[in-house]
Length: 149
Image (cartoon, rainbow, N blue to C red; front, top):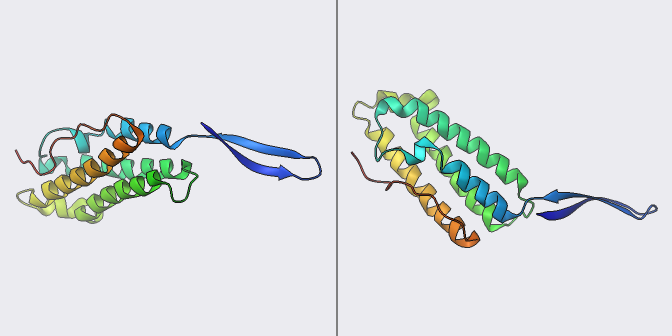
């Protein structure tokens, strides 16, 4: 935890402050959160019928990553750069599905969905490995990104 000054009082010679989370603590919270996301961790390929649940999970991940980004005080922090890249992977997955996931539902073989899922996992794997190495954390144990059933 760090301390951040929030206000200074010149005549009263006072300082207001608040506790801030360290980047390492935020990184650990992100790892813990992502480690439990089925869109990343269950199975090597998913059925097309799972696309709605995966999209909902991706939206939740994107929102949670945005919340964590708001906690990082350093504008050019490595963690900020990595979390933005991870969040972008979820955005790309959501966009691949189209409005309300219609591209995933209209794909007869599920190839569009499974390719988007594989790409998501690979991008998240690369970024979380960098975060884990930088902050000496246990990384995510994601299934290989491009494996199929």
